[in-house]
Image (cartoon, rainbow, N blue to C red; front, side, top):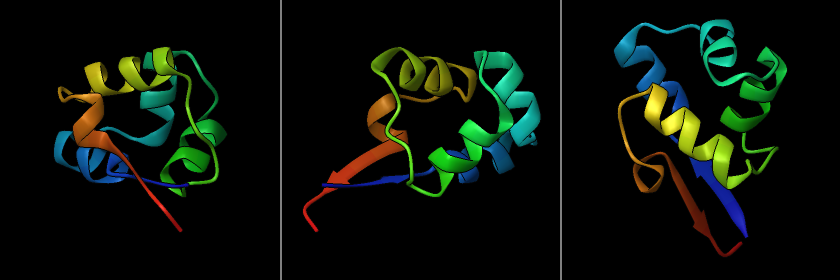
Length: 67
């Protein structure tokens, strides 16, 4: 399965940097970079925390597709 994410779009809409989002959800900036590039699948708690910080839902931020 391949994960795609809209984290970068939602960050831009809210004018939040990768570093700021990382601090809000309690991870390193590199984790946000990996998430945005689809190289890391978040835990359910992290996905929830990011969605909440960006004012959206997990379903809106993350999608999975067969490769």
